[in-house]
Length: 185
Image 1 (cartoon, rainbow, N blue to C red):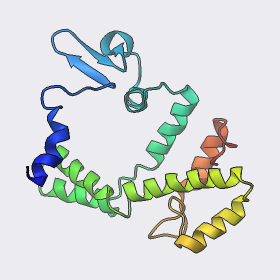
Image 2: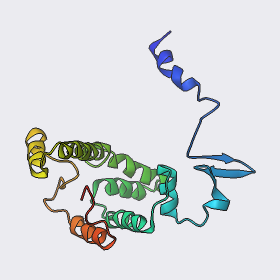
Image 3: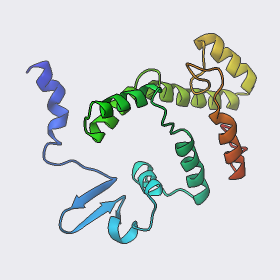
């Protein structure tokens, strides 16, 4: 058996059946989302709350939604000089479809600079910090050691600017909503 056939073997079980816990469309009948009827049980939700339910499997409080919405809106810059936006704008200028232009921009946002790598490294930082704090290491010592070891802490700072104008506004909004003293804040 070739390597390709061996590699593909686990996927063959999904050719005719794809088990899914987040939802299922029973065409001409109903749609279920996280075990609930989409049209009967979830039609009251706003778009953001609904998508968070689909992604996470839980409903968020109105305060949590307000903060997440604020973060979403306040980091959505329309500036075409920002690299992923530039890619989407170029697609639009070339008269490609909106979906294709947005997809190209999203693909660019998954680069080492913007996307999954910084996100994973940021989460890793928080998890390692929590473990270190549980062992009595001070925040200051942990941060200094991490910067010395890795040269940076992902999620804090920007590649092209020394100041992030979003931070003070987000902290203010978090405090207004009662999240100003959270573990990771």
